[in-house]
Amino acid sequence: MWYLFLNGKEGMDTMGKTTISRRALVTVFGGSALINGAVLRAEAKEKMIRNQGLETASGVAPDYDAIIVGGSYAGLSAAIQLARARRRILVIDAGKPRNRFARASHGFFGQDGQSPKEMIERARKQVLAYPTVRFEQAEATRATREGDGFRVTFGDNRVARARRLVLATGVKDDLPAIPGMKELWGTGVAHCPYCHGYEVAGRKIAILSGKELGVHQALLLRDWSDDVTLLINGAGELGSEDSERLQARRVKIETVPVSRLIANGSELEAVEFADGKRLPFGAMFIATRYSLASPLAEQLGCEIEQGAFGPTVKTDDFKKSSVPGVYVAGDAGRAMHSATLASADGVLAGVGAHQSLIFAK
Image (tube, rainbow, N blue to C red; front, side):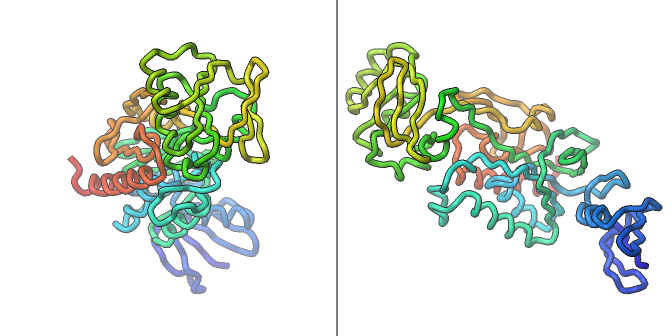
C-alpha cells in the first residue's frame, strides 16, 4: 500500500513513491485507489492524477495564473510567453483550428509551406516542455467571472480557475450554401490570396462574392492571374465606376447565379450556373463572412464590434478586452486574419496578461 496527495506540493510516501499534491489523499492498493475514502478503479485513479490542477467531484484545485482557451497559433504563442515567465497556466483546446482544411500554411516566417497540423503539434510540444504548463484536449463551454478571477467549464463538466483569461478561440467561416463549396473549402476554394494565391497563379480564377467585396478581391487577384472572373451570383448590376475599374484591370463579369461547383478530386474544375452554362476554373476565392467560434467572449460581456465580414472582439494594443483580466488574441480579436498575425497577437496577449499580474491597477 502507498499514498499520493493530489493537487498540492511534492512529497514522498513511506515507500519512496513520489507524490504530486496534497489536497486529496489517495491510498493506492492493487488496481484500485481510495480518494478521501471513495474507491476508484485503476483507470479512474490515472485520470485523477492526470487531471491534477482541475476541479473534479472530489475536490477543487488551486488557481492557475492564466487559462488560455485555444491551442493554435495565437493560443500557443500566448502560452509560451507566460510559460517563460514561470507562470502556471492551463491551455484548453478543442482541436479545431480554422485552417485545418488547408494542406499548407504560407507566408509564416521560417515555416512557409508547412502543414498547419504539424506546425501546431511542434509548437505544442515546445510549450509543454515548460513544467508550469498543462494542456487539456477539450472544448471550453462556459466562462464566468468569479471574484478577482475566472472560472472556465470544459470537457465533461470539469472546471478550472485562473486569475487571467486569454481567449484564442478564433472564428468559423460561414460558407455560401452552394453544392460543392464545403467539399472544396481549403483546397479548390480559398479566401486569402496572400495565403493561397501563389499556388494557383496563372490558373483561371473565379471570385464569388458580394458586389463591393467582390470588386476589391477581383482587382487584387489580377496580380496572380491574367484570367480573373467576378461572379456576381445574381446580386444585380455593378455601378459604372466599379465596372470601369474592373474593365481597366481586364476582369470578366458573370451575373447569373451559381448553382454548383464541380470538383476534380480536391481541385475546382468548373462552375455551373443557374442557366445551365458551365465555365472551367482552376481556383476560386470568396470573401466569406464569419462568426465567433466560441460563445465565451459574449458570456463574459466583452465588447464586440460588427465589421464588414463579421464580429470582432474589441481589444487594446496588448489585446486586453473591455472586461478586465480577459485578453483576446488571433482572428476573434482582429479584422485582418493570418497565421502570422494570430501568432503576433498571442505574444501581445501573453505579455499583456503577465504584466497585468504584476502591475495591476
